[in-house]
Length: 228
Figure (cartoon, rainbow, N blue to C red):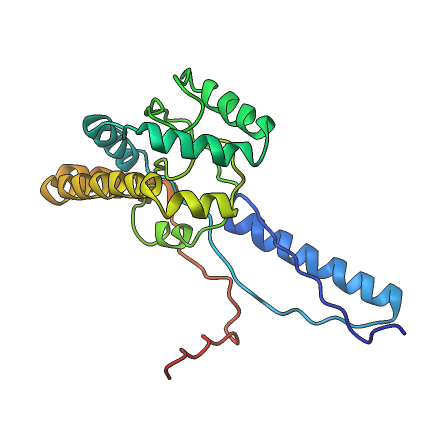
């Protein structure tokens, strides 16, 4: 029996909002063409949206300087043993890829289990490969991001191994380190008007007069909360 309907999920990603709109329209045209060829119909169900991140080097430089001042976390023998056990579940290939990526920055890790160093700062801006609503925030206020080590090298994203690391001392140390960086950086911007002005000036320069635009269709309603 041929089913009378089928569901397909598509994640459309692009470097910026304008390109995303063009690609989204293109995907809909492809669906329309497929429906015409097969004498069927299709309906779009919109699931979510996130804008691209507007980077800010002024904030990023302060974040990096604070990271260096505080210093990277150190790891105990028990944590390194736990890391090795996690890595053993996935094989050496992913570890090798992670180490190669680190070495591209000029760092040679002392051990290949958990990051215990700070990658040198670079003004080079690279687009991320994931989707985040931090992008939407960055269109409204100057924003920057940084990473800390909350799981071991060479394990796949969105895996049980990452959850395991995040729930024990490895993840706790990484999160505490991040909290310290945020606290000190926030204090510096609160107490230095020149830093705030420079960050906002760069933000305005990168926006080039563009305004934030949510691509969520107006007919999409916020789902009710469970207690409402």
